[in-house]
Length: 126
Image (cartoon, rainbow, N blue to C red; front, side, top):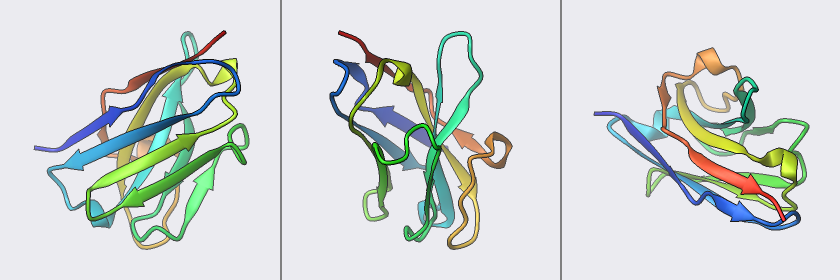
């Protein structure tokens, strides 16, 4: 069965860093674009970053560009999101998701994604 399991969330001070992981199973990981999304209380879910199946293509929301870095290890069926210079407005539940696609395909459109994880909480506060 398809599973996406996020980990690495927690409480961090402003300016700090976290690395989120998304471990996938139950589907052909190499054929999927993987995205990270987040949802803050009272707000809609929004796209953060994504990486194409063959890795060279990445995309970032303007709000995180220059602070977050996405990467993937297809040998471990895992995608990572390194988050630096964290701000209180980054506080949210972070979800990873998988979208079937062709090489170099990137998208932060929620409806393009078939599989979703349960999320991990990230809180940025002093």
